[in-house]
Length: 73
Image (cartoon, rainbow, N blue to C red; front, side, top):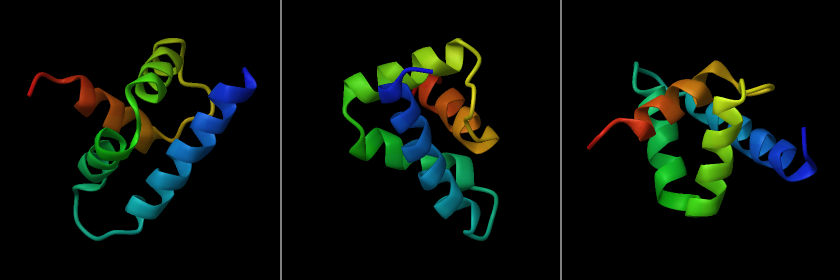
């Protein structure tokens, strides 16, 4: 895994770890909302490409959030 992708994986997993502690069943939606609001398009595209390549190292919550981001609005 390239260093820049590894950093994105770490950051995404940290976000997921935070939202996983929140009550309710909206954690993936919250992660998706955070990524959409605060990550620039290049970062999101790199994350999408990593998920498409298998998503090594990513939390299942991040993978679910990416799936939500890719759904048509």
